[in-house]
Image (cartoon, rainbow, N blue to C red; front, side, top):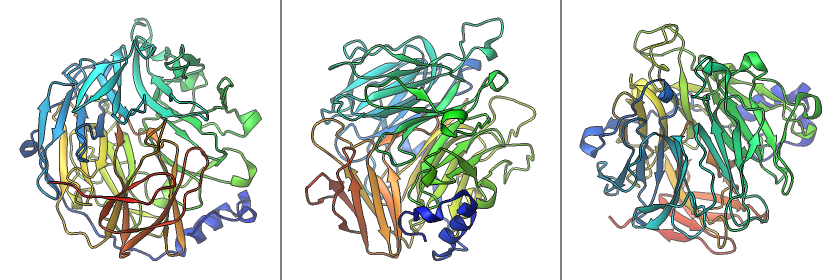
Length: 536
């Protein structure tokens, strides 16, 4: 049952547990998944940026990866908090040591996070910058130069403590809809913990953005993502919240219908089940291979892996399978500190190229909270192919004890092996290159479509391995203050080819394509795949 969408008759609540078990047990077991080897290259790569600041910077600390030099290699934009942010140009060679050159192109103050997005669909990457105070839309000019387009694009940057972001192109629109998540009202001196600022929805208004729509109520969002959770063709906005649970706060999801005001999913009308965690980050993937996105939610010692109970019901009712899957990650696994963990940026990726998803989690104490672990290493949980994960962060060499926040798992030197960059509070950001030999094959693709939404945000890539089909939503948002735009990486295991197709944002279903492994391919609607090769 690992392949394709589960038949509707098998998706009743009574049978969901059995179905999930069947789904994972029919795949080849990887009881001892190959452990990737990472080597830290922070100093030699030229990184020298840390995320600084006191209580107004206890959250945030993101990194954005994107190609602004048009050579295919991803650049790094690191938030700095009270220290300056920094853009690092990627000068690495294919398969070689990581190398970056710091520039002053995006040196800004009070930066909490950033997400790359081609807002005006001109083929040049732009950057959404979340800040303490006025958020900024930085228009890409080419050659890694940027211009502040916040005012000219009609975007209200506000004056809030912005900590979350997501973007989608709604049907029929040439400009994206941007969601901004906000945290505590920092101007509230009497009792700031009870004063979450409203989140904002920025919809297009002609060739610019209209006035923001408040998403009320809001409960101090730290992550958000647009997701077509029920495969309706109309993505909803899922929000992970950190505060105000004593004031009816909870995790949220908003209906978005073209031309209609946003509407909150409720327990009474929609079957939404109340969930209260200290929400930090969201990662989505079709982990159970039932054809619907699953959601990993980070928190403080209460991480969740949510799967849809009954797709046929049409209700967003989720079961938590974190414990049975081995991804609770609620305490440190190394370092000797047995107090609960604090988790931030989560990301699914196939780091060992065995065709099974893995999960990275950035960890770190909020500051010096005595009830939570001070020595709290990052997690690298390897998928076994049986629906479970095993910890390998210490064996892989990424078990940093720094106070981590945002991160990206991305191929920085374009050798087909995923690397890792992590932003740390009060310490330099770290970067690791994957240096071990992996037996598994891989393929990387980029989506390009004409007109609006050039990078096809909201598309779905289906990749077929023997009797199973994995579905990957192409999103802009999620994580913790960290985003990426560029090559999409898929591990293939022993397969010498990839069979995949694209379901484009307008509903068009692309043909199944066969792509050679160990290569890069650009995919466009109705066009044959275009092979691409790094030139250094």
